[in-house]
Image (cartoon, rainbow, N blue to C red; front, top):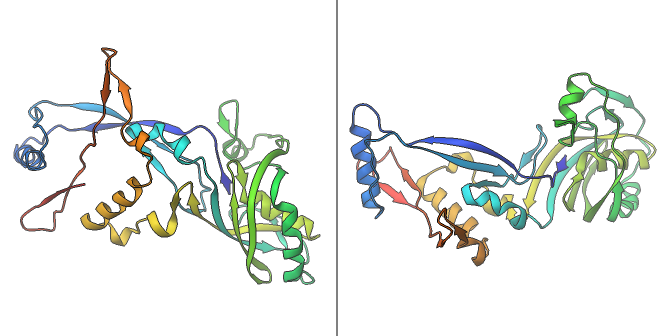
Length: 289
């Protein structure tokens, strides 16, 4: 996995606020806005605005877990908000190496692992802790000539291995060992690749290894246990509570940031409103978060 600390990915999202042709939606949305205490816009006009959306670090296609997303002004907060460490739980498989360094790739090598013990693994983890040098995988989000290395590899292009670079590992612990599988809990800094770590551990044990499963459990102050909202809990109340927990992590100076307007005068951006309509309620109630 890569805990990429590369520049945030920001893409425009066009939000169409035009009413439907029946006029029913226009009246409903206008009433909702009025109920929330917001000024009523001109709903009879077609309005469009560009909204920036960015994320704070790519995840492997086969990985799961925390991925922090910034919306609008939040895209500018990602770098400072996510400057802390990242944490992962990974399951490695001994005796098997692949071209992608995980289970999605083609097997390139197989070696015996039957003599490897739990003590052997625990004994070498210290070598991968602290400020170390690490070679990034060929299949990665790192770019060459504007294209990701993984994209070039999939196209059959020849890609040279990147030189080793300094990375930081705050801690590694072995949670479980059931040959050929071993489970690690890793806390690291940006730019660190869990796939490279597992592969290097296999080599250090005179065998080989690849990532079977990978979950990011922490990114900056956001954790999988406290801030992620499972899909089966996507309700008005649960979303509201989740937003409150996440907003509480924002530094005060970022919550109310001064921005310059086109007239070069400072304006304080006040808290905005998000209205979510619960279509399952008979009274079609609107809650403002």
